[in-house]
Length: 298
Image 1 (cartoon, rainbow, N blue to C red):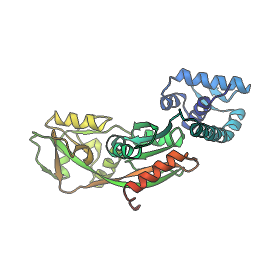
Image 2 (image 1 turned 120 degrees about the vertical axis):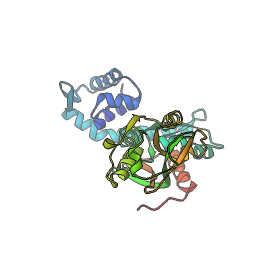
Image 3 (image 1 turned 90 degrees about the vertical axis):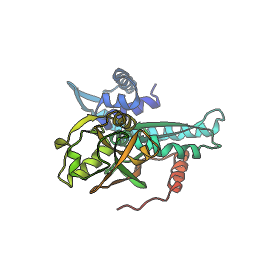
Image 4 (image 1 turned 60 degrees about the horizontal axis):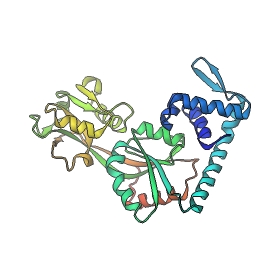
């Protein structure tokens, strides 16, 4: 018997070109993904992939299934939504992905306001911008919200809010309260991991001043803003760029004024152009866009 999760697994493997990447998105083991594909092949009575060592391509049968699978998944989505509306015991679920700053500091208050007097549940993935984009491209989550720069023809990208990055140091640090762009080369700096929208933006801005991470004193790469703030607070000779919203009420670190540099970015809503959003997702997106006036694209 073919179920919804098996079809999703097949589509993810094809979209991401990797069994292990699909397993990571679905939060299951790689053998579990392999077993789902094998059960689908047994059900259809045909091989879906042509395997060559560790690589694979779609078979002619797999190509037919992939062309038709969106229709099948969307039909199952519509049936599931109808079942939710008919059942008083089943709660509607809002499913989306958010990048780190959005997920930890921007969206929680909006969600809390939105769900008042609603019997719904939330499934939210928090990852870096690259991970969020992959999840929306695969259509595993209904939509995404990121602080990083995204360019993809398959996505509708809607700016919703402006954000600022600031340079910080420990509260009792001997580092000066004001630094020039050249001073950034003097101090060890903590940065986000590769794939982070924050990291990409900082690299882009610094490159305009002929500064790259390769000629800076990279002390550590950390995949979480809260961890970076805690790290800086306990290491008085270290600096880091972090979202201003993340440290506005933090007494363990201090913002350093920068003479020559200002880093701003936009939070953006990501929706797959071929995705049919359910009623709850559309309602939340409308609420989000009206929560603060959308900013104009530059």
